Amino acid sequence: MLVATWIVNLILLYLLAGLIVASFYVWRGVGLVDPAARGTSPGFRLLIIPGCAALWPVVLMQWIRAEPLPPEDEGPA
Image 1 (cartoon, rainbow, N blue to C red):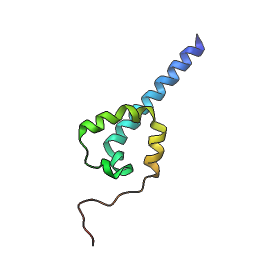
Image 2: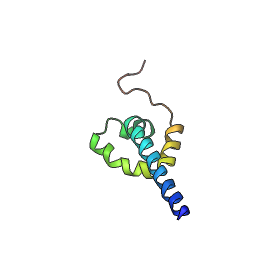
Image 3: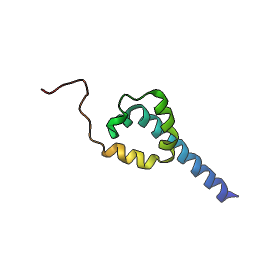
Image 4: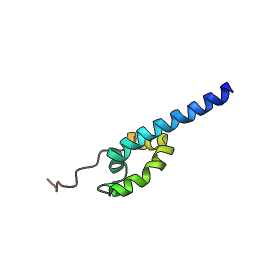
């Protein structure tokens, strides 16, 4: 019974970490990792939350490795 409790708690901890990372990623990071996702609708961002939460270690590593994109509004200097 103790082992089952630990397994359930670890799964819940993984899901909680996934929801936290996914929330911040969808809010700020998705446009950095994928330029095509810049300026997407809130509906699209809501759709990708479950996948980002499930794969949060991969998403976090991509976000960390992403290079900042130049702003869209500025033209060539």
